[in-house]
Image 1 (cartoon, rainbow, N blue to C red):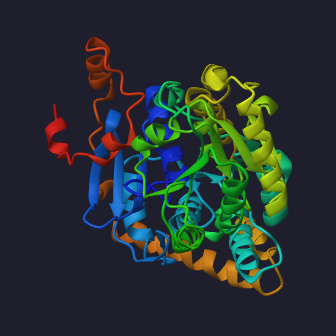
Image 2 (image 1 turned 180 degrees about the vertical axis):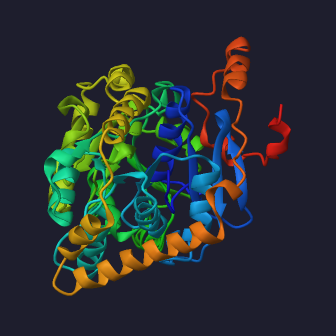
Length: 457
């Protein structure tokens, strides 16, 4: 697994990598993760179940995304692939430079490559045009693509000019046991609306700032709990000051993932005002915790929850106020019983099922033959009149660098890593009835550095 986004950073991609890797390990596969260093977290770390993570030194440019190094990443990445006897490279995130570079280098080395797209992009603004061209380059020689929703699939197929037959839809999932509802927690004197999100423009914080005063004015028994941080937090603070809503709007700031459930169960309604979402795992977690959901009807959100768990609204101020008002009236007169949501969703969104479907993708691409260099160049040449020629030069130089590395550091000169004793630790957890399948993220954060020499036995 290759991505810029992994723990200790928190987000949907990060949890997806961790949970998917854990389930693949339980199914008998060897999985390692390659990401960039986070502060003092550098080198090799072992997480729960022997999940091995390489934290590579790289320069972060924005929001934990690294600066593209083109070929600077190749020597150490090749060393890791050979040392760990890797057969498939799975990249995550269109914004991840490590993901794009990892796919390019792995295909040059003759390995199989898979890409999972977690985002939606437009087609008109400069940022989307550049990102789409980069994605077209990366996916010109990909073995398979996975998207988290059907809307995301349509978006990716159009952006990268892919054949729909080469793209699968495998949704995100949730560990439902980590989000058990607690009906005794919410204050019966209030209807509490919870918002947990990164406080950025894409998450619709401007809409949130506009609708909170209107809801508080119309309903004196409604309050808001807002968790998260970001550049838009100052707008929420100014709104609270302007309308004197300190007793009705609580700003919690950053929330660790293992604390999310404790915040969610304090509420009755979960509000999502995002302007774009490929899936939105937050609304699944909220429904699992027993909250009714009100969300903007954008991206892949309409595919996520059954209709009795959610009200939709256009990403407009007036429509959101109407949808929230309907949810408040529904709660006020007892027409909703969210206590059964957790049981329904744990069957719908299961990480073991996601891992099984991903495993089938891996098995299918293992049956295909790798394309020769001339065929790879032909594919890249079709990326555009000028871009195609540039891409061909990048790939040709990548191939020459690989041959140079093969001459300087032959495969047999690279020491193979000792395999982590998965079976021994799996038996240990089974004997002690402490299966590590529902560890919360605070356990992930407290990872341990392990010397491989300990496993020489």
